[in-house]
Length: 164
Image 1 (tube, rainbow, N blue to C red):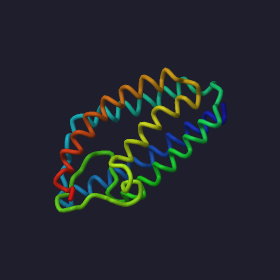
Image 2: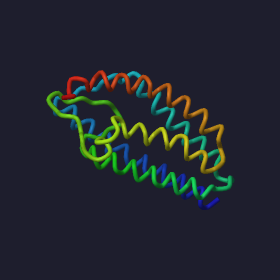
Image 3: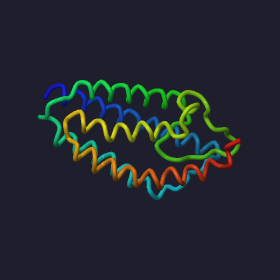
């Protein structure tokens, strides 16, 4: 139970630390002339992630931990850090386009068009599996896929003008 709480605590803490960073980056990008794209689905993303994390806190504390899957989750989190570092001051949880900017082409963006979404897909599926909660992994993965289908389409449309 201590390991379970520590893992969930670290994931929760990382998200809580990221929120003010994302908010500050969003405000700065908007102040630099950026505009938010397709904000209508954003509350669904917030609700999905909050429900996912809450379900894990409710269901995972007394479950056995699969250590190989936990190690794999740790690697995914390294990918998350790589994405955040690569985007730097451009990283935000919202879609903000600043006219005249070029697309980030360093880090994982050299290999994958949407590495942040790749990481999120892996996180949502993998962390419940660490605790043997395949039903949680399945339900939230399907919901996330539906939301990401909308989000990625909107983001691709918005970024088309920045692609060279």
